[in-house]
Amino acid sequence: MSNHALANAARVLRESRCTLAFTGAGISVESGVPPFRGPGGVWAKYDPAKFEKAYFRRNPEEVWPLLKEIFYSRLVHAKPNPAHYALAELERAGMLDGIVTQNIDGLHQEAGSLVVHEYHGSTRRMQCMKCREFFDASNISLEKLPPPCPVCGGLLKPDFVFFGEGIPTDVHRAATDLAGRAEVCLIVGTGGTVVPAGRIPYIVKNRGGVLIEINLHDTSYSYTVSDYYLQGKAGTRLPELVAATLG
Image (cartoon, rainbow, N blue to C red; front, top):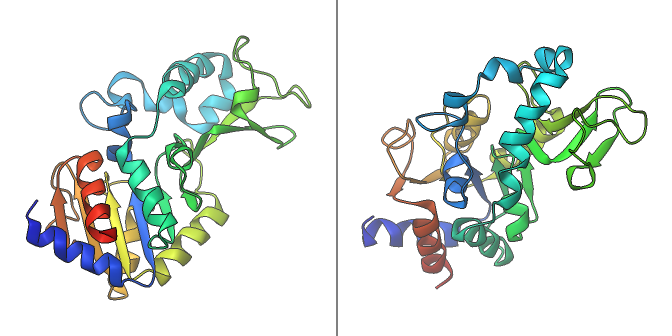
């Protein structure tokens, strides 16, 4: 990453009246959270068809042990890394209006970020498919699988988006509203291959906004729509950018 690009990106952030961060798996990999796609990803090891909502409803006894193994036995040990903390610092400084994340790990909130739109939901909540009540996942015992709803005994489902399930309307509306106001979109750890989430930066760009991208490898954004491409690890590059911005 050139000092010239870093300085220019920092200047753009300082001058922006509304800034959005759009984050994906790459920001949490450094926290030990495996990505879903690519070599070593979750879908290379597990059949994604088993995480289709209708399949889960028919076969909860088969799917719940997989959910526990992938999302609860592992993710409970994950902690925010310097990239998460850098975004929280930017928000506290009044230079970040919100985060739209594709991640379901809750690490942005744990790092101190307050405005987080979880586009694909969160492992930290569960919802009963019968009575529709929501529960804090940390209060639900996974000793017995599937875990019964504490209220009605119905089937609990992690409150993240399964295959065959739509994006929650309120989250989509909040995310697109923020993108519609943003002058700058900070893209961190995502190539935007999953839609409709991946379209968020284009909303900013199409209004004349500036895209600042931090990714380890080139993406579909890098040389087409990104105005500044700062290549490298999120946990290194993002703190550098925030330090230069607040400096």
